[in-house]
Length: 297
View 1 (cartoon, rainbow, N blue to C red):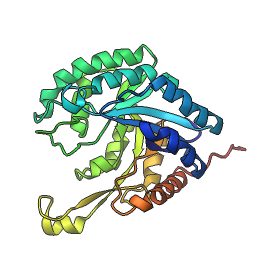
View 2 (cartoon, rainbow, N blue to C red):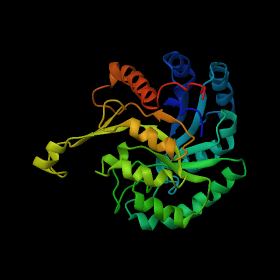
View 3 (cartoon, helix red, strand yellow):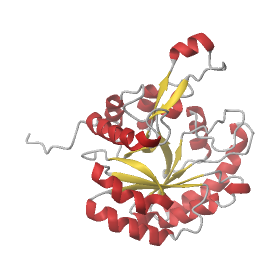
View 4 (cartoon, helix red, strand yellow):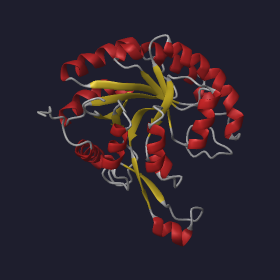
């Protein structure tokens, strides 16, 4: 087991060189570099070199690199998503990481089952490409507004879907980028789920994002009424006990990082965004048991 679970934050690839030097002094220990739908014309090797000139001397890690789009369709704004997966897999080592993450994609507005064949076709090749470089792939568990029956981004948002995905494509280097928030918005209790799935070794990375569920609203209006009943939150402001979450991760042998996914909290945003993230960082460090102390026993 690693001595500590490092706590960091997500940073957009096109803002990384500007933001990372400003964020390091606050105590962030890792960064997850993200792209939306495409890496575009970014020279990833050069970007990695320049980022590591900042992070390596500070003892800060790049936990993973990510592209969030639909790699199964190749249509519209997702036409470059699959190629971006390939480019990031090839460049991950330059960033100092072995992990590339994103959405599975899905066949648009079809049930989850309808996407499994295309998922297997696409990610069999990506898994082989990654494995040849000693790498891993993980899928975020965000529904992106989709359901079991329809959606246009991701099939990896429900534990039953995970079981189907891993049965369809049984590769050791494919896993999950898990967070409690995306389960809570579906009114799934993340704790028993985490106890089960951490034992499988399939949780490769954790997003630091929580949720607040308004049970009073649900009791009065239900989940299909006019009132919002759940909000994404920065850790420390939501319903989850992250001491429990980190304890379960440690007990299960988790060796990855926790990177805060900001820009979703309805209160700590805009001028309060960094305030919220720094508080989330401090809270998560406290929940992991503080800083590592060498044992005298």
